[in-house]
Image (cartoon, rainbow, N blue to C red; front, side, top):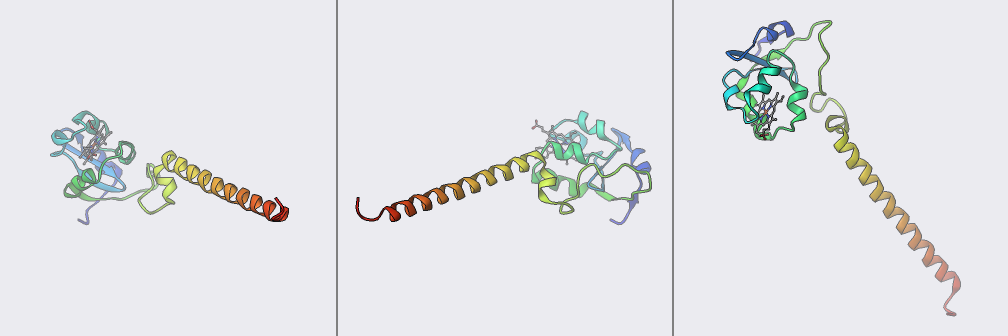
Length: 139
Ligand code: HEM
């Protein structure tokens, strides 16, 4: 699997009878898969001959869907000057938060709130304990 395709090469395969897509800089021949796609052929024809990384990731495809891609691989994308930038970060190339976007951002925020809340509660508890100790056993 060492074939290299430019965007121009991929763009030539944009019909239902001959359909390539780019996902994460890999080139897939999805011609045979179009009729099997659970999400319908229309969406695949829309992205045929193009970089469909964003569309593919936006749907949140399962691992099964990613596995379905493997046998369709025909090569890798060869970027040339002036080509569009990758539509989505490559796996592992950026911080995980950047890959999953807002969902992870919210997760991190929520986590921070929980941790800070815990710290505040602990501090308050310590403070009350200290107050009680200072008051002495007289009560
Ligand atoms: C080209 C490679 C693709 C493969 C191998 C693929 C595979 C699959 C598979 C196996 C499913 C079933 C659910 C799952 O396992 O996640 C699915 C669902 C779906 N796909 Fe794709 N897909 C591809 C591209 C795309 C693209 C580019 C789009 C959108 C532009 C898309 C839109 C959808 C939608 C909307 C569903 C949900 C269908 C439903 O639940 O009714 N797919 N795809």
